[in-house]
Length: 555
Image (cartoon, rainbow, N blue to C red):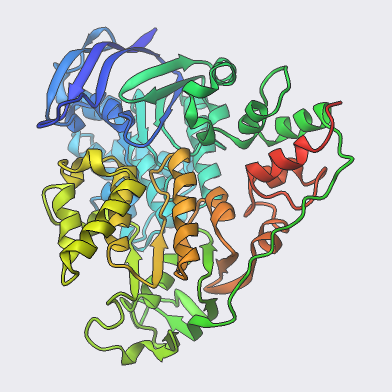
């Protein structure tokens, strides 16, 4: 039975010439699990919000959406709130209460549910989600992963028929991401809830879905099963540049000349390689980074807590970062990664220890000396950087005292690199998540810094732009710029970093070169390494895997 029926749907935002989505015809079956994927800004989030009356953006709407055979626009508000749940990308944006138990009860209270029934429902849901130990906690004290879990639980307590999720794992660490996705699968399978998930990171998500929708330029390119979608991609490679969004096993299958069924996960990827290729050539020559010996950032025995009575977020942490290096810092949600970046940026101060930036104690920098053509921070939430009504105004704001001709050259280069020209007249808050990330990055690059701190820079970005961002970072590195990035995106960090550090138990417990780090981990490593590690050596990225496999003859 069809839950949603979308007919000839086209939507155009105000003051825009081209529609954000166009000619959408789509059926979503009741009880199905559907993934929507596509390049940044292709209309995925717009399409998803069309299915929730309260979130539908203002603009020109053509066509019709039916929910259970009736027009969605005329749906009763209470029914819409109860039956159609929505989980956003940013966990903090959805929480309204100060206590976990109050957040769980909030929706039911607004629906007029009797108190006794509320208590029973939230007790059952807290048990189902295994969050009993969070029940009395302040919501502000939760990690990003815990907040997203709470968002999901607070929606599910109202027993919705359909769950809409807009990149809910974008800010989750690899282990929490996997657990969150497994929970979605459990909700779909055991409760029969229809799930429509917008997602860029398909490594763990793809095999959970019944159908995959591939979007581009506002259109739907494909709506089919996983296997059929993967076969379609292989036979139409030029039309599907977003293969880099798909799992590593799918990327390998599409890059190697082999027939048969496409592997969808690590286990199937291992079998695919073993069944089709020899391993006479086992070793891929490791690429050792050329690191400067000059320390540009040094943290010595840093300890930090947010208030006197709170536990330490960081404790006795020491870290040296060399000039011109790209360092990735990984770790679980709530480990203190963003806090560490804000300490380096001078936004927070440790209660013990010393921070030295370019040979100078951070406390001795006066006025804006620390930031003037020196150090910049791209925050986790790019909205924090936006104050104007258009992308153009946001960029021109950065001119300051820079001579006009020099600024114009710099601006044109960055607009071209980040592909922002077509967004020039848009309001920053009308941009997709990935487009916001690009705009925020453009703003900090206009400052021509020597040190760049990036907090989750790939959040909301498609696979194509991640590859492009890798090239941008490498070009900055060649100019001698030092880059420190905090990320949950293991595949991206493996492509871009010289060294990687793991933050655990309030301190850095492992800092090693790219190869030393990723080749010796089970979970904080890439899918390419997990697929090939029993057969080939020194493989980290998809390109590494393709390189060594092609050197081996087909069986």
